[in-house]
Length: 158
Image (cartoon, rainbow, N blue to C red):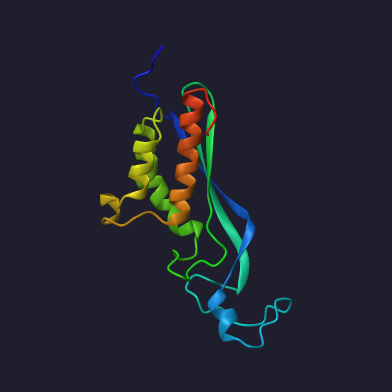
């Protein structure tokens, strides 16, 4: 039996701390006396409250019509904000966008094929003034949608 469309029936965003941390590399480089155990210098990169701080995560859960749940994790890299990387991923900045722009798109998204969804995720979004989603959000969305495609087609993600 071939399905014409297979769309999520519900989308949830769950916030928490990731299993890793962020380090303000610029602050460390600018301070010759930096002691990682004392953590006694001020951050300099936008978004940082401390030189080393816990990473944040938004888990994307897509409930599918067959009762399964696809999951993706919006997380970013250790040295955010440097070397042309996106700024530090702060979940409070991205959760409203996920709820107002991404959730409606996901609920209409056909997950039977992955590539068209991956292309959309990576493109500039008109709803965002033709800006791209943060790298962490694109990463989590691609994970969730790849998982959903695998579950919908009853195969592995590979």
